[in-house]
Length: 278
Image 1: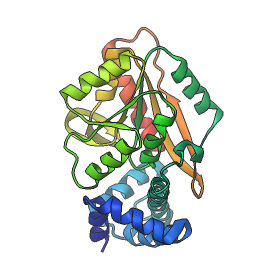
Image 2: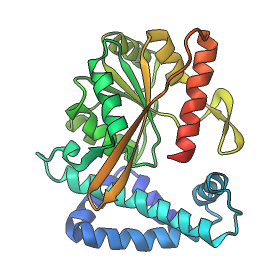
Image 3: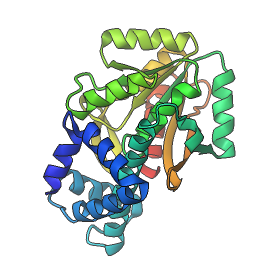
Image 4: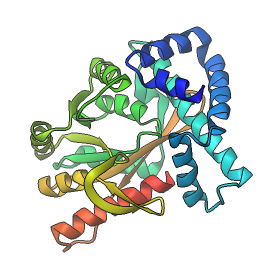
């Protein structure tokens, strides 16, 4: 059943079905269904996605894999992710609803946002997919004057459908390619914003320590930022109450005088540490 649920959510029509279901059940009913689904999936520990979540969270929480507390944390993480998509689909049903009306920022993040808006250089915003990142992406055009999102180079299934949804909400999605990277460089040099997710495995990438294990990940966002003289921010989002979220932005700052290679490594490692604890 867990495999079928994941397959349904990730196929081409998944977002359409889920949006219709959320509209039918409303927020309260959808949340209750999400809680049941999360509870079921969290017990399917042989599924690769669930096993990876247990491994990652055991590193962050410093708990053994058989800990009841770890099991509860994994279930809560799944609940939060599903609640985020519920709120996303309910917002998408309201054509004139402003996403940023559902956001609040802590003082540090508000200052980071104002600094980025006032700065002449562009901003590379890096995030993690399982933290309601789509809600943040859809809200960015309501904050920044021009936003480009570098997405999956070969989007399939629900990713293609979500790209159409994002485009309709004013988000420019460009599958990652040499042409898209050149466009991103032009946007950054013009003072605009480029968004990337940093948690996808990259077989041709460099090896970094991630959740306590060596992982091949791309540091392309750091290379892009250093090449264009752009600032880097790590952004994530978490729920405060039903339908209300806190956005947190953390500028990645490096000591002056570092070489380009040192800056790239420093930015990448700082982003990975933020991802582990967000």
